Image (cartoon, rainbow, N blue to C red; front, side, top):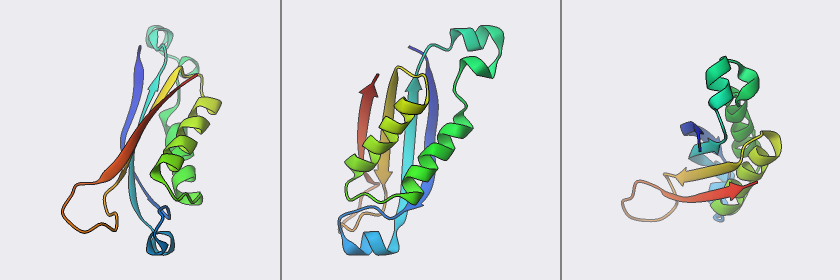
Length: 118
C-alpha cells in the first residue's frame, strides 16, 4: 500500500491529566501516515487523485491546538477518526509524542501510536 507521510508536525496544546499541563500547555509532535493507492496520482500528475498534505496539516493543527484531551490516546483517536472521515484513505497511522511530560527523569518523549482502518 502506498503512503503519504507527514512527520514531525509540531504544535502547542493543552492536553494532559495534570492541572499544570492543561493550564500552561506544552509542545506535541505528531506523525501521520495515510495509506491509499497513489498510482493514478503518479501516472496523471493530478491533485484530484491524492490527498493534499497541507489540508491534513491544518486538520491536525486544529485538533491539537483548539481542543483539549486528558489522554494522548484520546487526542490520537480524534485525529485518526477525523482523517478517516475527511479523506479517501484506507488506513491512518497517528504517532503522538509528548516531549515534556511532567515526569521526573531523562527521556526523549512519551507517546502513543495508533492505526485505524476504514
